[in-house]
Image (cartoon, rainbow, N blue to C red; front, side, top):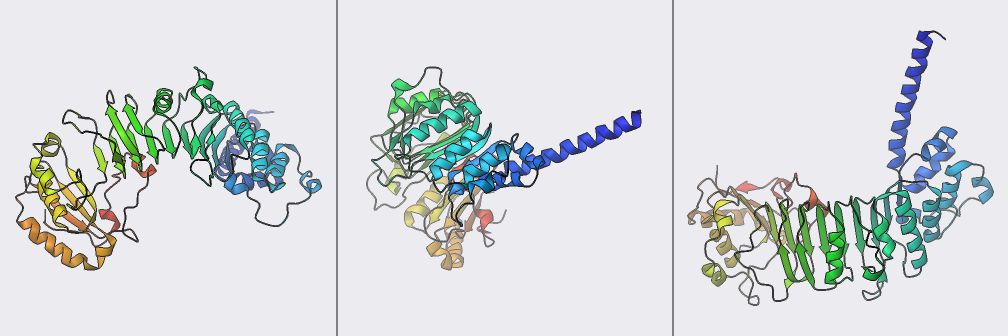
Length: 426
């Protein structure tokens, strides 16, 4: 064989490898049911399947079409592809389909979502799934228990802590594993994103979990079913979100990379705020609060603003303030005046009207112009922008994962409305 023939064969091999790479990328983005069916196309597709990281969601395994084909027909497709086709097509039992798919695929698993399975009826299977996921290298895992009652949570097997390959983990409506059953070596050395939704876990459980996540960057806690006592002492955390929970204490220390703190619909159990609680690395702070004087003590009101001393962060560092669900109440106007007269480097105040006020947007903009003309701005170049709400109804829509995107402002919706107008020209 001369050199020209050798080069041609080499180029053909490179082309085939490139095509295989494209096909593998396509397969890795398909739901497990559809990806497994491609094994019927040719022996080449069946070979590729073995090398593709699996994307599996039990919601995709629900059999909603005609009865599955006879096993004899499925067996005509040999190899691993046939096994997986039987796993996803050959049963109406979603839990069994998950078990068979996880057992049949050699791994790794790019993404596994179990959100439709009644885990109280399949607790033994859950333990087996976690063993398989740990052994075969799962990267993203979502476990949500479909509970009929909040007090009927299923306890997570401690095997979860063996899934050391995880980079993203969301668990909801479950009980945290018994600490005594967790191996000392169990940890998540690669986990960067963690979401905890309506979990039953104690203060020590939360501390233990965070201690086992040395490179965690994004933390979300929603609807916590115990008092939250959170200590943020991490050199990797960049964003912490806390929503619909009762907070006893939040301590932030040794968190040099922390950029975002979000508190959404939380209430404090005797929590006190001190001027000494300063986190200089935080660039975005989100707080949902009431501004009307008709609320219980502790809510934002004119007396509170009058008693507030100098705020170094507001005076020297804050460049943008976004206020949603604005209704032009007196207390809201007082708050806008408070920050506008103190923000020496403040560049923009974005006011998003409540949806029910959108029909009067032009009139309210005019009112805001008149009001702002009486305000002595600390920074004369500061703009006040009034936007109509992009949301279909009153109430603030919120995307938890959107806040994890550090390249975007999670609050600014001024780009969402074509009618946003500045009350003062630059």
